[in-house]
Amino acid sequence: MGFDLRRENAHLSVKIPDWISLLMLAIRYGWKPAGTKAPADFQGTWAGSYTLSAWQTVGDADSRRLARALERAMPDIPEHDATPRARRPGFLERFSGPDGRKRIKAVIAFCHGGGFRIE
Image 1: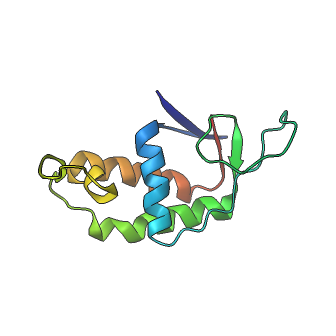
Image 2: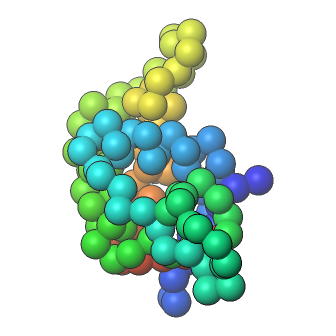
């Protein structure tokens, strides 16, 4: 299970725990979420959530700010796999090692492409 991040010519699937951890990591590194735009068919009050798969939209500038915050985190993410040593891995340990760093780099690259839908 996960979130599908989509724009007209790009798609990225992200596991739910990874997406939530990436959002929290980005906030820790200075991202100030602008909030998402409600899906076209939504009625009522929209809270701007990034953690629903409701076809809400992340704006261009917000997406790029998210990417830059995650880039700022990269030097602090261990290149070796630090999860076996951590009793309760934090955000940095979660993305440590080659596989974790590859996952975060994919999100960074995707977010640099501009706005997207969360499905």
